[in-house]
Structure formats: structure tokens, C-alpha cells
Image 1 (tube, one colour):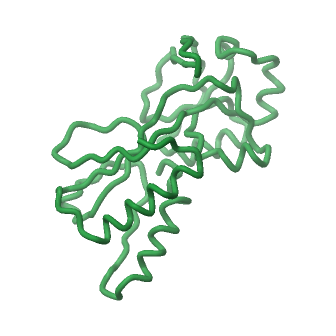
Image 2 (tube, one colour; image 1 turned 90 degrees about the vertical axis):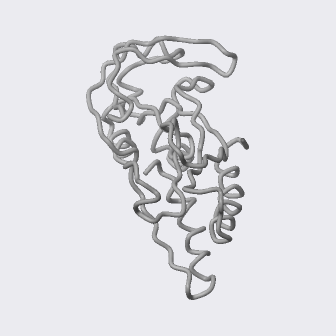
Image 3 (cartoon, helix red, strand yellow; image 1 turned 60 degrees about the vertical axis):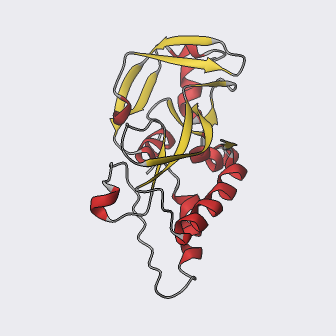
Length: 201
């Protein structure tokens, strides 16, 4: 689950008000599912996707930004550039692979390679967010996941204008024959992702 549930759940709820024969089964996790074998209409993936026989539709993109709690930022000192985070404690998503050097890019097309000291890993994006909220270190998350945390002050963006990766949101479909219920879902989803910071595909 890449924190998309806040956008997906209201759309799924709307589908439950369609004809009584329509049933909604919403799976939220970081696992890779076999759409055909499990009888699923579609899957959403934020980030890179493996080559497969599925039909892939690119819906939009957003940046993965650097965030941390006030206590972590205050303890580390001044941070004007990603290179100042070389000796900082980091929290990482295990699915990305725990590398010792990460590359950050700026909106002005600058690049910075930073040696990171990963203190904790987790296999779920929401758990990563919880670790950051609890002050475990610095981390990178999609902007939509921390939008409310940034607004409330629970987390702060570090080095604004710099990001780790540009993430694409894809819809994976088992076949080109798209049922009306799936078309309705994708239309609603496209309208829901832009207000929270996604750029159109």
C-alpha cells in the first residue's frame, strides 16, 4: 500500500452505489498479485513496474521527497543541501534495496549523490511513514502520502526542490477489454489524483 487508499477508498465506495450485482474487493498491500489467477480487474502501482503481459496505463506522476520530524531535523543541524545528510540516520523501504548511496535530483536538473546510514527498514510505505513520524530518522516518501503531515507540521520537507525519484502511477489491466466498472473507476481516479499533487501523464 503506497498510501493510495485515501484516494481509492472513496472511489470504491461510489462503485458500491452502482447496481446491486456489482461487488467491490479492495486489496491494499505491497504484494505483487496475479490479476488473471486471482480474478482482479486491475492493480495500481506507484513506481517502477516489472515487464509483464498486462495492459499498462500511465495515469500521472509525483516526486518522492525528503521528510523528517522536527526532533530529527533539530538534532541534525542545518540542512541546506542533500549532501548535508550524509551522516544522518535514515529509514528506508526494504523493497528499494538498502544501498549505501542514494541519488537526489533538483527541479533545476542538478544531481547529488549522498552516502546514507540506514538505521531502520520496513516493507510497507505506511509503516515507513509511521517510523518517520516517531522520529526514527530521515526518509523519502511520495508527496501525496505526507501532504497532510506537512500541512499539520507533524513532518517537514527537507531540502525543498530536491527529490529522490519521480514516481509514475500505473494501472495494470489483465486485458484490453475494459468493463464499464473499470472505466468508471479509472475516470474517477484520474480526477482524484491531481488535487493531491500528481501531475497528469
